[in-house]
Length: 178
Image 1 (cartoon, rainbow, N blue to C red):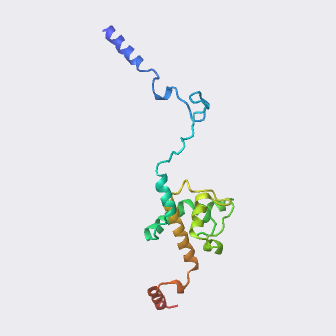
Image 2: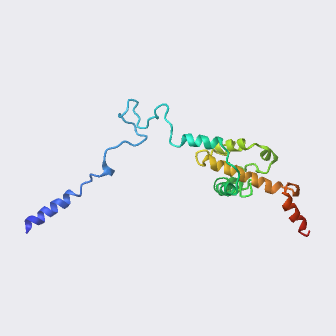
Image 3: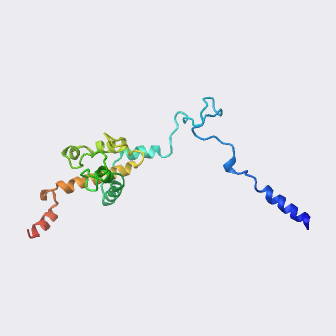
């Protein structure tokens, strides 16, 4: 009876060694290493390497999608996530981070920004400008175009006149008592 018990204990103890993936020899990204001739673990990609989806992303950057209600809804969603902390939900530049001491961005309703072309807004969202940091790595190109569409809708909402309305809405407005 003692012999099988000893064998069982020996087998159990053999399974307790730390021979797993946590204890294997490996290099960490920023440690010096003799693995490569330049002594670094991180290596630059070979010349001509193209990241996955780079070609599709480049096409999305140059092709502005048609403005639809779905695109505007997506633009509002993305604006609320990425833009409203500084520009606030109305675009006037009094977001929550401004209230906590960050520099106030210009109002999106300033004439200068209302006159700016859409490509300029796309570039500012992508690469940043002034105190605004770049969002090109955080927001997909199609979503940047959606945000621009929503910004234009915000601007229009603050500066529209009755003359800007389609004829059927003008007629309905005329029916509303003052």
